Length: 395
Image (tube, rainbow, N blue to C red; front, side, top):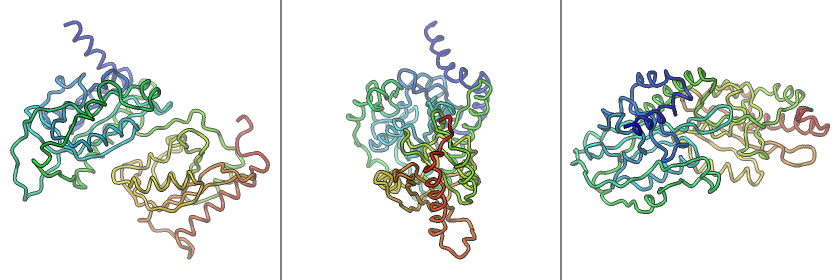
Protein backbone atom coordinates (compact mmCIF):
# COMPACT_ATOMS: atom_id res chain seq x y z
CA UNK A 1 0.00 0.00 0.00
CA UNK A 2 2.85 2.33 0.85
CA UNK A 3 4.39 1.62 -2.55
CA UNK A 4 1.17 2.60 -4.32
CA UNK A 5 0.90 5.82 -2.35
CA UNK A 6 4.52 6.67 -3.10
CA UNK A 7 3.87 6.09 -6.79
CA UNK A 8 0.84 8.39 -6.70
CA UNK A 9 2.90 11.13 -5.06
CA UNK A 10 5.65 10.68 -7.64
CA UNK A 11 3.23 11.03 -10.53
CA UNK A 12 1.50 14.03 -8.95
CA UNK A 13 4.86 15.74 -8.40
CA UNK A 14 5.46 15.67 -12.16
CA UNK A 15 2.76 18.35 -12.37
CA UNK A 16 2.71 20.13 -9.02
CA UNK A 17 6.47 20.65 -8.87
CA UNK A 18 6.34 22.46 -12.18
CA UNK A 19 2.95 24.15 -12.28
CA UNK A 20 1.95 24.58 -8.60
CA UNK A 21 -0.59 22.55 -6.61
CA UNK A 22 -3.53 24.33 -8.24
CA UNK A 23 -2.88 23.17 -11.77
CA UNK A 24 -4.76 19.87 -11.37
CA UNK A 25 -7.92 21.67 -10.26
CA UNK A 26 -7.62 24.02 -13.25
CA UNK A 27 -7.15 21.14 -15.70
CA UNK A 28 -10.11 19.26 -14.18
CA UNK A 29 -12.37 22.15 -15.17
CA UNK A 30 -11.39 21.97 -18.85
CA UNK A 31 -13.64 20.03 -21.24
CA UNK A 32 -12.39 17.33 -23.55
CA UNK A 33 -10.48 14.07 -23.37
CA UNK A 34 -6.76 14.54 -22.86
CA UNK A 35 -3.73 13.25 -20.99
CA UNK A 36 -0.28 14.53 -20.04
CA UNK A 37 2.70 12.19 -20.10
CA UNK A 38 6.20 12.63 -18.66
CA UNK A 39 9.02 11.47 -21.02
CA UNK A 40 11.64 11.90 -18.29
CA UNK A 41 10.07 9.20 -16.09
CA UNK A 42 10.73 5.49 -16.72
CA UNK A 43 8.13 4.11 -19.11
CA UNK A 44 6.92 7.56 -20.22
CA UNK A 45 3.82 7.27 -18.00
CA UNK A 46 0.56 9.19 -17.97
CA UNK A 47 0.75 11.71 -15.12
CA UNK A 48 -2.61 13.42 -15.69
CA UNK A 49 -5.90 12.25 -17.23
CA UNK A 50 -8.87 14.56 -17.76
CA UNK A 51 -12.37 13.85 -16.54
CA UNK A 52 -13.53 13.77 -20.15
CA UNK A 53 -11.29 10.77 -20.79
CA UNK A 54 -13.64 8.47 -18.88
CA UNK A 55 -16.69 9.29 -21.01
CA UNK A 56 -14.75 8.76 -24.25
CA UNK A 57 -12.68 5.69 -23.36
CA UNK A 58 -14.33 4.19 -20.29
CA UNK A 59 -11.10 4.47 -18.33
CA UNK A 60 -11.41 6.39 -15.05
CA UNK A 61 -8.41 8.70 -14.54
CA UNK A 62 -6.99 6.76 -11.59
CA UNK A 63 -6.87 3.61 -13.73
CA UNK A 64 -4.59 5.10 -16.40
CA UNK A 65 -2.20 7.11 -14.20
CA UNK A 66 1.27 5.59 -14.24
CA UNK A 67 0.58 3.55 -17.37
CA UNK A 68 1.94 4.15 -20.85
CA UNK A 69 -0.48 5.64 -23.39
CA UNK A 70 -0.16 2.54 -25.51
CA UNK A 71 -3.03 1.07 -23.50
CA UNK A 72 -5.45 2.87 -25.84
CA UNK A 73 -4.16 1.01 -28.92
CA UNK A 74 -4.81 -2.55 -30.02
CA UNK A 75 -4.46 -5.24 -32.66
CA UNK A 76 -6.12 -3.26 -35.45
CA UNK A 77 -4.42 0.06 -34.75
CA UNK A 78 -2.66 1.08 -37.94
CA UNK A 79 1.08 0.56 -37.77
CA UNK A 80 1.81 3.59 -39.96
CA UNK A 81 -0.26 5.86 -37.71
CA UNK A 82 1.58 4.56 -34.65
CA UNK A 83 4.95 5.06 -36.35
CA UNK A 84 4.02 8.67 -37.10
CA UNK A 85 3.22 9.29 -33.44
CA UNK A 86 6.44 7.61 -32.41
CA UNK A 87 8.49 9.82 -34.74
CA UNK A 88 6.74 12.91 -33.45
CA UNK A 89 7.67 11.93 -29.88
CA UNK A 90 11.25 11.35 -30.95
CA UNK A 91 11.38 14.64 -32.82
CA UNK A 92 9.61 16.48 -29.99
CA UNK A 93 7.15 18.09 -32.39
CA UNK A 94 3.35 18.49 -32.68
CA UNK A 95 1.42 15.88 -34.62
CA UNK A 96 -2.18 15.17 -35.63
CA UNK A 97 -3.39 11.81 -36.88
CA UNK A 98 -6.62 9.85 -37.23
CA UNK A 99 -6.12 6.60 -35.36
CA UNK A 100 -8.14 3.56 -34.32
CA UNK A 101 -8.16 3.34 -30.53
CA UNK A 102 -9.90 1.03 -28.09
CA UNK A 103 -12.20 1.70 -25.18
CA UNK A 104 -11.86 -0.05 -21.86
CA UNK A 105 -14.47 -2.65 -22.85
CA UNK A 106 -12.54 -3.51 -26.02
CA UNK A 107 -14.70 -1.59 -28.47
CA UNK A 108 -12.76 0.05 -31.28
CA UNK A 109 -13.38 3.70 -32.08
CA UNK A 110 -11.77 6.32 -34.32
CA UNK A 111 -10.27 9.44 -32.76
CA UNK A 112 -8.26 12.42 -33.93
CA UNK A 113 -5.11 12.36 -31.81
CA UNK A 114 -3.50 15.78 -31.31
CA UNK A 115 -0.03 15.41 -29.83
CA UNK A 116 2.02 18.39 -28.62
CA UNK A 117 5.22 18.70 -26.56
CA UNK A 118 5.30 21.08 -23.59
CA UNK A 119 8.63 22.90 -23.52
CA UNK A 120 10.49 24.71 -20.77
CA UNK A 121 10.57 28.22 -22.21
CA UNK A 122 14.07 29.13 -21.03
CA UNK A 123 16.14 26.03 -21.78
CA UNK A 124 14.02 24.18 -24.34
CA UNK A 125 13.62 20.94 -22.37
CA UNK A 126 10.51 18.84 -22.99
CA UNK A 127 8.60 18.64 -19.71
CA UNK A 128 5.50 16.77 -20.85
CA UNK A 129 3.61 15.59 -23.90
CA UNK A 130 -0.02 16.59 -24.28
CA UNK A 131 -2.32 14.15 -26.10
CA UNK A 132 -5.86 15.30 -26.94
CA UNK A 133 -8.39 12.76 -28.24
CA UNK A 134 -11.37 13.99 -30.28
CA UNK A 135 -13.87 11.36 -31.50
CA UNK A 136 -14.29 11.26 -35.28
CA UNK A 137 -17.94 11.06 -36.28
CA UNK A 138 -18.75 8.39 -38.89
CA UNK A 139 -20.33 9.39 -42.20
CA UNK A 140 -24.09 9.33 -42.01
CA UNK A 141 -24.25 6.60 -44.66
CA UNK A 142 -21.94 4.23 -42.83
CA UNK A 143 -23.47 1.46 -40.78
CA UNK A 144 -22.08 0.87 -37.34
CA UNK A 145 -19.70 -2.09 -37.39
CA UNK A 146 -19.55 -4.58 -34.54
CA UNK A 147 -17.02 -3.67 -31.89
CA UNK A 148 -13.63 -5.28 -32.35
CA UNK A 149 -12.62 -7.15 -29.23
CA UNK A 150 -9.49 -8.79 -30.52
CA UNK A 151 -6.57 -9.13 -28.15
CA UNK A 152 -4.67 -5.88 -28.02
CA UNK A 153 -0.95 -5.43 -28.43
CA UNK A 154 0.99 -2.62 -26.80
CA UNK A 155 2.19 0.17 -29.08
CA UNK A 156 3.06 3.86 -29.17
CA UNK A 157 4.39 6.43 -26.71
CA UNK A 158 7.47 4.42 -25.92
CA UNK A 159 9.72 5.79 -23.22
CA UNK A 160 11.94 8.53 -24.60
CA UNK A 161 14.26 9.61 -21.82
CA UNK A 162 16.67 12.46 -22.36
CA UNK A 163 19.78 10.32 -21.84
CA UNK A 164 18.53 7.76 -24.34
CA UNK A 165 17.98 10.43 -26.97
CA UNK A 166 21.45 11.85 -26.46
CA UNK A 167 23.20 8.48 -26.60
CA UNK A 168 21.31 6.93 -29.51
CA UNK A 169 19.99 9.90 -31.50
CA UNK A 170 16.58 9.72 -29.85
CA UNK A 171 15.61 6.07 -30.30
CA UNK A 172 12.86 5.19 -27.89
CA UNK A 173 13.98 3.16 -24.94
CA UNK A 174 12.68 -0.01 -23.27
CA UNK A 175 10.66 -2.46 -25.44
CA UNK A 176 9.50 0.04 -28.09
CA UNK A 177 11.47 -1.53 -30.92
CA UNK A 178 9.87 -4.91 -30.34
CA UNK A 179 6.27 -3.74 -30.43
CA UNK A 180 6.76 -1.73 -33.59
CA UNK A 181 8.22 -4.72 -35.36
CA UNK A 182 5.52 -7.05 -34.05
CA UNK A 183 2.44 -4.95 -34.79
CA UNK A 184 0.63 -5.82 -38.02
CA UNK A 185 -2.49 -4.66 -39.82
CA UNK A 186 -4.68 -7.71 -39.31
CA UNK A 187 -8.29 -6.65 -39.13
CA UNK A 188 -7.79 -3.29 -40.84
CA UNK A 189 -10.58 -4.18 -43.25
CA UNK A 190 -13.02 -4.34 -40.33
CA UNK A 191 -13.77 -0.67 -40.76
CA UNK A 192 -12.70 1.87 -43.33
CA UNK A 193 -10.34 4.49 -41.86
CA UNK A 194 -12.06 7.74 -40.99
CA UNK A 195 -10.84 11.20 -41.90
CA UNK A 196 -11.24 13.96 -39.33
CA UNK A 197 -13.30 16.96 -40.39
CA UNK A 198 -12.00 20.52 -40.22
CA UNK A 199 -14.33 21.10 -37.27
CA UNK A 200 -12.81 18.17 -35.39
CA UNK A 201 -9.29 19.39 -36.17
CA UNK A 202 -10.14 22.87 -34.93
CA UNK A 203 -11.71 21.40 -31.79
CA UNK A 204 -8.53 19.46 -31.03
CA UNK A 205 -6.36 22.53 -31.54
CA UNK A 206 -8.69 24.71 -29.46
CA UNK A 207 -8.62 22.19 -26.61
CA UNK A 208 -4.83 22.05 -26.75
CA UNK A 209 -4.58 25.84 -26.67
CA UNK A 210 -6.80 25.98 -23.57
CA UNK A 211 -4.60 23.43 -21.83
CA UNK A 212 -1.41 25.29 -22.72
CA UNK A 213 -2.96 28.48 -21.39
CA UNK A 214 -3.65 26.81 -18.05
CA UNK A 215 -0.19 25.27 -17.85
CA UNK A 216 1.45 28.55 -18.72
CA UNK A 217 -0.60 30.46 -16.15
CA UNK A 218 0.17 28.11 -13.28
CA UNK A 219 3.79 27.45 -14.25
CA UNK A 220 4.54 31.12 -13.69
CA UNK A 221 3.68 30.65 -10.01
CA UNK A 222 6.71 28.38 -9.66
CA UNK A 223 9.02 30.66 -11.63
CA UNK A 224 8.87 28.30 -14.60
CA UNK A 225 7.36 29.30 -17.94
CA UNK A 226 6.24 26.72 -20.48
CA UNK A 227 5.29 26.99 -24.14
CA UNK A 228 4.21 24.80 -27.02
CA UNK A 229 7.38 25.29 -29.05
CA UNK A 230 11.05 25.09 -28.30
CA UNK A 231 12.14 28.54 -27.16
CA UNK A 232 15.79 28.39 -26.16
CA UNK A 233 17.56 31.73 -26.45
CA UNK A 234 20.58 30.62 -24.41
CA UNK A 235 23.72 31.08 -26.48
CA UNK A 236 21.99 33.09 -29.19
CA UNK A 237 24.31 35.88 -30.35
CA UNK A 238 23.10 39.44 -29.91
CA UNK A 239 23.16 41.57 -33.06
CA UNK A 240 24.89 44.90 -32.92
CA UNK A 241 22.82 48.01 -32.37
CA UNK A 242 23.83 49.24 -35.84
CA UNK A 243 22.53 46.09 -37.52
CA UNK A 244 19.37 46.12 -35.42
CA UNK A 245 18.76 49.72 -36.42
CA UNK A 246 19.26 48.95 -40.12
CA UNK A 247 17.01 45.90 -40.00
CA UNK A 248 14.36 47.86 -38.09
CA UNK A 249 13.89 50.17 -41.07
CA UNK A 250 12.73 47.27 -43.23
CA UNK A 251 8.93 47.15 -43.08
CA UNK A 252 8.31 43.66 -44.48
CA UNK A 253 7.61 40.59 -42.36
CA UNK A 254 10.82 38.59 -41.97
CA UNK A 255 13.17 36.78 -39.60
CA UNK A 256 16.90 36.06 -39.68
CA UNK A 257 18.19 32.62 -38.76
CA UNK A 258 21.76 31.56 -38.01
CA UNK A 259 22.78 28.42 -39.95
CA UNK A 260 25.93 28.04 -37.84
CA UNK A 261 24.07 27.39 -34.58
CA UNK A 262 22.31 24.13 -33.61
CA UNK A 263 18.80 23.89 -35.09
CA UNK A 264 19.29 27.16 -37.02
CA UNK A 265 17.51 29.47 -34.51
CA UNK A 266 15.87 32.82 -35.14
CA UNK A 267 18.15 35.67 -34.05
CA UNK A 268 16.09 38.60 -35.37
CA UNK A 269 12.37 39.15 -36.02
CA UNK A 270 10.82 42.22 -37.62
CA UNK A 271 7.86 44.06 -36.13
CA UNK A 272 5.75 43.10 -39.15
CA UNK A 273 6.48 39.43 -38.53
CA UNK A 274 5.35 39.76 -34.91
CA UNK A 275 2.14 41.43 -36.09
CA UNK A 276 1.55 38.68 -38.64
CA UNK A 277 2.02 35.76 -36.24
CA UNK A 278 0.90 37.21 -32.89
CA UNK A 279 4.08 36.20 -31.07
CA UNK A 280 6.29 38.48 -29.02
CA UNK A 281 9.96 38.81 -29.86
CA UNK A 282 10.95 37.12 -26.59
CA UNK A 283 8.84 34.08 -27.44
CA UNK A 284 10.51 33.33 -30.77
CA UNK A 285 14.16 34.36 -30.45
CA UNK A 286 16.12 31.13 -30.27
CA UNK A 287 13.32 29.07 -31.86
CA UNK A 288 13.54 27.19 -35.12
CA UNK A 289 11.04 28.44 -37.72
CA UNK A 290 9.15 25.15 -37.51
CA UNK A 291 7.12 26.53 -34.59
CA UNK A 292 4.84 28.08 -37.23
CA UNK A 293 4.01 24.65 -38.66
CA UNK A 294 0.99 22.59 -37.68
CA UNK A 295 -1.66 20.21 -38.99
CA UNK A 296 -1.74 20.30 -42.78
CA UNK A 297 1.72 21.83 -43.21
CA UNK A 298 3.25 20.07 -46.22
CA UNK A 299 6.14 17.77 -45.32
CA UNK A 300 7.21 17.80 -48.98
CA UNK A 301 7.52 21.60 -48.99
CA UNK A 302 9.48 21.54 -45.73
CA UNK A 303 11.89 19.04 -47.28
CA UNK A 304 12.21 21.32 -50.31
CA UNK A 305 13.13 24.19 -47.97
CA UNK A 306 15.76 22.06 -46.24
CA UNK A 307 17.32 21.08 -49.55
CA UNK A 308 17.64 24.70 -50.68
CA UNK A 309 19.09 25.77 -47.34
CA UNK A 310 21.68 22.99 -47.43
CA UNK A 311 22.69 23.95 -50.97
CA UNK A 312 22.75 27.67 -50.02
CA UNK A 313 20.12 28.52 -52.63
CA UNK A 314 17.08 30.78 -52.47
CA UNK A 315 13.56 29.41 -52.83
CA UNK A 316 9.94 30.58 -52.80
CA UNK A 317 7.21 28.25 -51.55
CA UNK A 318 3.55 28.24 -50.52
CA UNK A 319 3.05 26.83 -47.02
CA UNK A 320 0.24 26.44 -44.50
CA UNK A 321 1.41 28.05 -41.24
CA UNK A 322 -0.21 28.97 -37.93
CA UNK A 323 -0.41 32.06 -35.74
CA UNK A 324 -0.03 32.01 -31.97
CA UNK A 325 -3.79 32.00 -31.50
CA UNK A 326 -4.13 28.85 -33.58
CA UNK A 327 -5.54 30.36 -36.78
CA UNK A 328 -3.90 29.25 -40.01
CA UNK A 329 -2.76 31.33 -42.97
CA UNK A 330 -1.41 30.63 -46.43
CA UNK A 331 2.19 31.77 -46.29
CA UNK A 332 4.04 32.93 -49.38
CA UNK A 333 7.52 32.29 -48.02
CA UNK A 334 10.77 33.36 -49.61
CA UNK A 335 14.05 32.12 -48.08
CA UNK A 336 17.44 33.35 -49.18
CA UNK A 337 21.02 33.05 -47.88
CA UNK A 338 22.62 36.31 -46.77
CA UNK A 339 26.38 36.49 -47.27
CA UNK A 340 28.82 38.71 -45.43
CA UNK A 341 31.50 40.86 -47.02
CA UNK A 342 33.81 37.84 -47.44
CA UNK A 343 31.15 35.90 -49.35
CA UNK A 344 30.30 33.38 -46.63
CA UNK A 345 26.70 32.74 -45.63
CA UNK A 346 26.11 34.59 -42.37
CA UNK A 347 22.30 34.24 -42.08
CA UNK A 348 19.20 33.10 -43.88
CA UNK A 349 16.35 35.56 -44.29
CA UNK A 350 12.78 34.22 -44.25
CA UNK A 351 10.29 36.69 -45.73
CA UNK A 352 6.66 35.83 -44.91
CA UNK A 353 3.53 37.09 -46.65
CA UNK A 354 -0.07 36.21 -45.79
CA UNK A 355 -1.62 35.39 -49.15
CA UNK A 356 -5.11 36.01 -47.77
CA UNK A 357 -4.42 39.59 -46.67
CA UNK A 358 -4.56 42.76 -48.74
CA UNK A 359 -1.34 44.69 -49.26
CA UNK A 360 -0.27 47.76 -51.19
CA UNK A 361 2.74 46.61 -53.17
CA UNK A 362 3.09 49.92 -55.01
CA UNK A 363 2.51 48.22 -58.34
CA UNK A 364 4.96 45.37 -57.67
CA UNK A 365 4.22 41.66 -57.57
CA UNK A 366 4.33 39.99 -54.13
CA UNK A 367 7.48 38.11 -55.15
CA UNK A 368 9.30 41.27 -56.17
CA UNK A 369 8.12 42.95 -52.96
CA UNK A 370 9.72 40.13 -50.98
CA UNK A 371 12.95 40.40 -52.95
CA UNK A 372 13.08 44.03 -51.90
CA UNK A 373 13.28 42.93 -48.27
CA UNK A 374 16.03 40.44 -49.13
CA UNK A 375 18.01 43.14 -50.88
CA UNK A 376 17.69 45.53 -47.96
CA UNK A 377 18.85 42.86 -45.50
CA UNK A 378 21.74 41.93 -47.78
CA UNK A 379 22.93 45.54 -47.98
CA UNK A 380 22.75 45.98 -44.20
CA UNK A 381 24.67 42.79 -43.48
CA UNK A 382 27.37 43.26 -46.08
CA UNK A 383 28.05 46.88 -45.22
CA UNK A 384 28.30 46.22 -41.49
CA UNK A 385 30.21 42.92 -41.80
CA UNK A 386 32.96 44.81 -43.63
CA UNK A 387 33.50 46.82 -40.45
CA UNK A 388 33.05 43.78 -38.23
CA UNK A 389 29.96 45.12 -36.45
CA UNK A 390 27.37 42.38 -36.96
CA UNK A 391 27.42 41.34 -33.30
CA UNK A 392 27.66 43.28 -30.10
CA UNK A 393 31.26 43.93 -29.01
CA UNK A 394 30.76 41.76 -25.92
CA UNK A 395 30.03 38.80 -28.16
